Amino acid sequence: MRHILEIDDLSSSELARVLDLAAAPDPARVLTGKGMALIFEKPSLRTRNSMEMAVVQLGGHPIYIAANELGLDTRESVEDVTNAMAGFHAAIGARVFEHSTVERMAALDRVPVVNLLSEQSHPMQALADLLTMRREFGELAGRTVAYVGDANNVARSLALGAGLAGMNFRMSTPPGFAFADADLDHIRSTGIEPEVFDRPEEAVGGADAVYTDTWTSMGQEEESEQRRRAFEGFTVDERLMGFAQVGAVFMHCLPAHRGEEATNDVLDGPRSRIWIQAANRMHAARGLLSWLINEAQQ
Image (cartoon, rainbow, N blue to C red; front, side):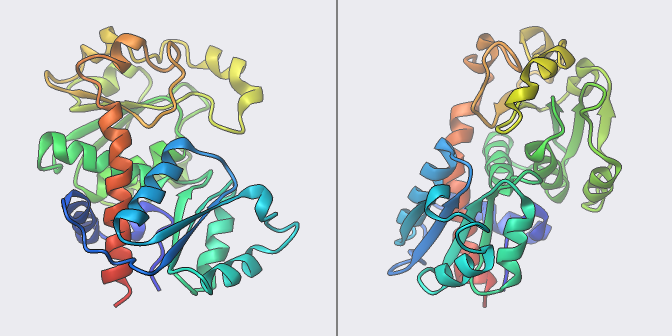
């Protein structure tokens, strides 16, 4: 049984195949007559809409299940919920607080489990990011993506995906917000050496894509003022974008805190690809599910 808990659960060739399927204009309806359980401990605009539409486009029926309908490990154990859902559905997607939750689901090996987000990783976002850059640049190998901001789950999955695609990955974070050594070792396992810089200008210099994310993620609201102070000087503005390659694009996984991690003139400017990137969440999900249901389990 194949599961996607992090993007490097795919090999480089499998990643390329998923991206090919994501770009297919007329996907095979591999979920006809089947359902997919979409479990959301954490709410999300883009994840819910992209996953539901991807399942529908593959001929299936998505079922959204909110946290208060489940009570994971309070009303019913993760294992019992997973076993119940496996009796109804061809796959389970889960957006959770703790990565161990999706690991426990996958360990049962009942149906394919897809991590829709955990505190550790966000593989679905990374797939959409790679699809966006591939549509922009064509071949990804040798291209450079620069990430400015918190070394969070989005950054970690993006770095792993960049490595699998043969890209270069650069990053700049304030002190105390960088990747742990274990994360850097994990990224190196994909075959690239991540470049880490103290100053955003150094990371962005000559990059093909400049990426940022909110400085305060869901669940970190009590740290928001502390984080705003720590990230002073890390706002992506037109001045910073000027260090990137001519023709470089700007990316953000959204939602954005406008004026904090990025300015309006960048978010809404001609280099911005944030709405294409958001739409690609649906296409990337469709590609992954096509591969996972129709090819990976054979």
